[in-house]
Image 1 (cartoon, rainbow, N blue to C red):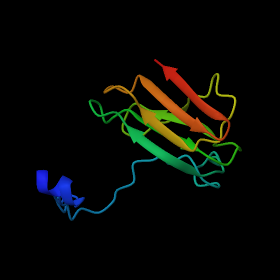
Image 2 (cartoon, rainbow, N blue to C red):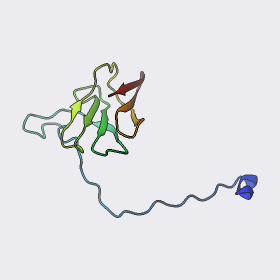
Image 3 (spheres, rainbow, N blue to C red):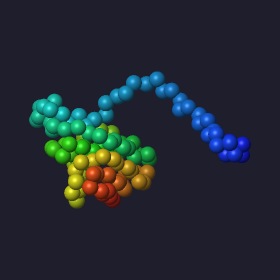
Image 4 (cartoon, rainbow, N blue to C red):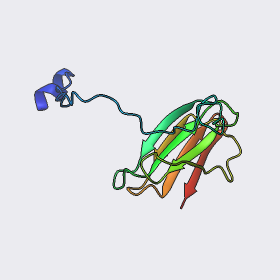
Length: 119
C-alpha cells in the first residue's frame, strides 16, 4: 500500500501452507560408497531441480570433482540417472536452474563460470 511504501514498512507475506508430509527419497540411489551391487559411485550431490511442467525430469549436480561430479539427469522421477557432462569443463556444480517449463534448457553454475545446455 501507499502508506507501507511511505514509511518503509514491508507488507506481510502470507505463510506457505503446512503440508505435514515427510520427505521421501527420489534418488539418485546409485550415488554412494558401495551401496549398490556394482559399488555405486563415491560422491555427494548438491543442487537438485525439477521441471515445472514435467516433474519426472530432474537434474542434480555433484560438487566434489570426483566420480559423481557434474550433472546427472533423470527422466523417470529419479529411478534412473545418466550423466550429462559433455562440454562441461568444470564438474564442480554449485547451482542449477531450469530455464523453461519442460527441462530442456538448463544452466549450471560452477566456480569457473556458468554453462548452458539445450536439449
